[in-house]
Image 1: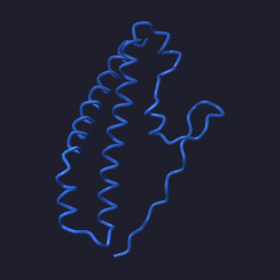
Image 2 (image 1 turned 90 degrees about the horizontal axis):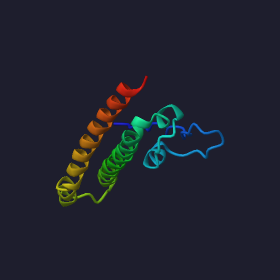
Image 3 (image 1 turned 180 degrees about the vertical axis):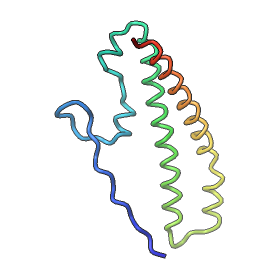
Image 4 (image 1 turned 120 degrees about the vertical axis):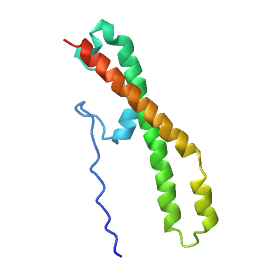
Length: 121
């Protein structure tokens, strides 16, 4: 069976003119909200800080899960693959904690977005 390889997505850029092109995940891991409408609203300050944390933590969890998937794909492509290799990868419980972390941080992010939305004029 032939496999088709997708073209890699074009690099994404930030909204700042002249900003160096960076991957979305890199930007998420360094995210700080600087939208003037949001940061000038005093009652949102703590929520924005927590929202930025949620964005970064969610991106980190996604990266860890993606890493597990990359290890899986790499293992499946090896000519010397063994059942033991697959067992070890399947027994990796770290990915379970990353999925739980992703679920938690994503839920927190969504709650925080709702709070901020309700406080905006």
